[in-house]
Every structure is written in C-alpha cells, then in structure tokens.
Amino acid sequence: MFESVSSFFGGGDQIPWCDRDVIVGCEREVAEASGGTSEERKNESIMRLSWALVHSRQSEDINRGIAMLEASLTNTRTPLQQREKLYLLAVGYYRNAEYVRSRQLLEKCLQIAPDWRQASALKKTVEDQIAKDGVIGIGIAATAVGLIAAGIAAAASRR
Image 1 (cartoon, helix red, strand yellow):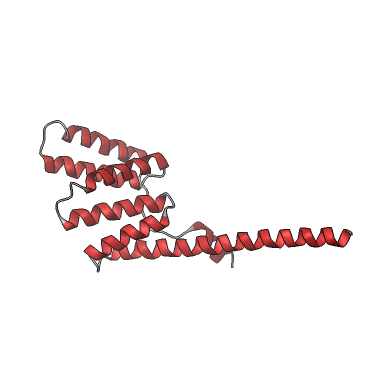
Image 2 (cartoon, rainbow, N blue to C red):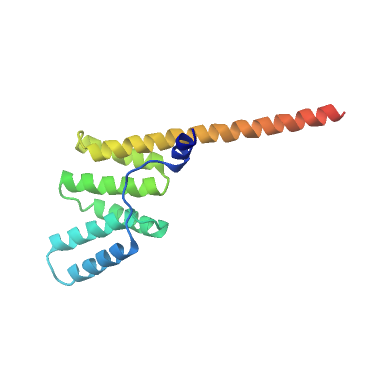
C-alpha cells in the first residue's frame, strides 16, 4: 500500500537528469564551435547543450534550454531534426510541469515518427501526470467542500 502511494506522488518517469558539469562542458563546446568552425558542428554543439539544459534539475537551465530550442526550431532543415527538437521541448515543458504543452509537442513528434517509442513513452508519462493532477485537484476540492460543510453544520448546531 505504502509503495503504491509513494509511486503515485513521486512520479515514475525514466528521463535522465543532467549535472551542472555536463552543462558547463557543453557551453564550452558551443563557444569553441562558434569560433569559425563548420555550421554543422556548431548546430550539433547547440543541440547537445539544449539536451543538457532541458535535462537539468535547475528550472533556470530548463527555461534556457526551452528558449534555445524554440529559437532554433525555425532553422530546422530535416524532419529528423524537427522531431528531436520537438521532443526536447516536450521534455523541458514536462520538467516545468507544463504537461498540456508537453503532450501537444509529443503529438507533433509522433506525427513525424509514429513508431518512436521514446516519444510514446513520454506521452504516456505526461498523460498519467495530467490524470494524477486531476485526481489530486478533485481530492483537494472535495476536502475543501467537506470542511466548509462541516463548518456550516457546526455553526448551525450551536444555534
């Protein structure tokens, strides 16, 4: 019983986390790639940094990764690149608890690559989180109504 309750509140996603030292290394790589190397190498470095940022435990990093990905989405040349960027955006929005936006992006990913298991798994996790938030919200609302009703009943019984 305790295990099922803790898994309900703890979540169960399998998305990896990224440490600050990895982000610093990616930032260094982007700076080096910006110094006159090929455009392809620079774009690959930016994608690695974006991946690291949206997988960070720090919300500032996640927001920075989301901004980078959104800005680079217009320069996407292939469906594969678009799919990758949309997926990373979905991860970022999931980490920021913006589940509806995350689900929308994952649906776009699955339009591009319907058999992509990674996107399907994250979409299921997002949908489970949306359902869980709904159950918690209903429980909070029901508790509030119960407390108000008990207060009214107690006040009426005093008269």
